[in-house]
Image (cartoon, rainbow, N blue to C red; front, side, top):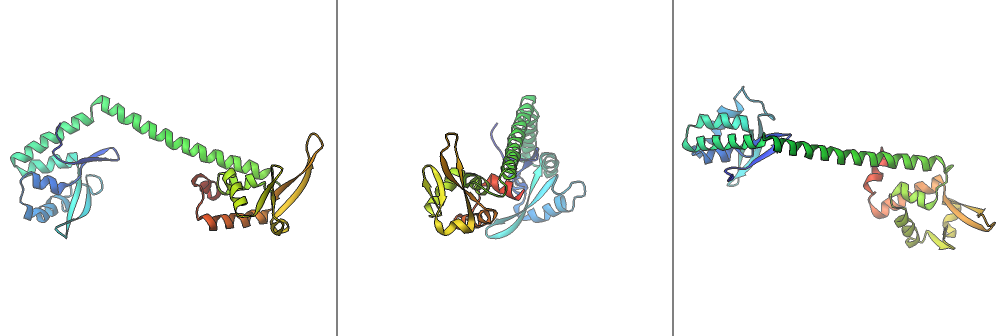
Length: 237
């Protein structure tokens, strides 16, 4: 079917995108548009604003011009009032579009699209809730101390990149695969614990204190001016 006029769908309702364009295409007097629109749209008590029609502020030849998105039901009613040959052609065109829209296969396709959208939104919600639960569990087990990787997960959602940033900023450095703070930061923002592994080898492990976590978060935000999206929701949720 050749497209006679632009249409769109809003909240599962089909609209003619520009009633003014439809009015002109039907052969009506362009100079009478404002008067006609007022009598048939604005002052028409049988139709409801933001449902049957949606007002638009447009510009034509550098002048403001009122226009409307209009539902198919209202559009069919209005073109019948115009009583031109073109108006009858447009009415039949809208009726055929409506039949195609209500075709069972098309209805099923729309339902599947809505279902897919709902699934994607649900998956996003589950992801955010999982992140919240994960961070909550990690915080419960830290006793107020935070490994750099945990701090990175809380602040950015990307612990490896965060640890790399700590090195780039000369806040921490690697020694024997462990991150350790530079001396000027140790007492203020870190607690360093010496522990032993299964083979009774001792090694140092560094933790941000609660004060250190607040400090590094502020420093990171100032440097990067952003948070990873999902973790914004975790922190602010």
